[in-house]
Picture (cartoon, rainbow, N blue to C red):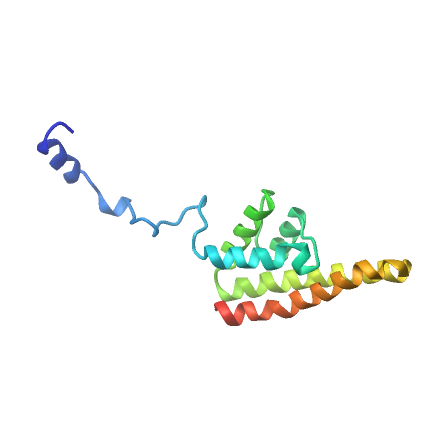
Length: 147
């Protein structure tokens, strides 16, 4: 823009309806609705040292399908972010949490089966079961706290 007239022409051609203010645009590449919410849940649910259960990318895909959402395979964190984006309303979040609960209960059954078949493994799997049950008990609080 060489002079003020070029600047005026640029503003006259500006269509405000085609643009959005910073932080108000919805984008597939950005999930910024609740970054601290998503990060907090990721830390509590996806870390096996906290939740007692390892949740793979395929597990996230299955949880999403059970909740009513189709999802492609991406890195785990990205898939979790997409799952939380889908769960942005109370009904979808309830479906996601229900699917997550069922998944964790299935893992607990597997751990209990390991303990039955190999009693010496109880030292390892008992702590996983305790953490998984604490995580399951935490899930309903998500609805209360955020919706």
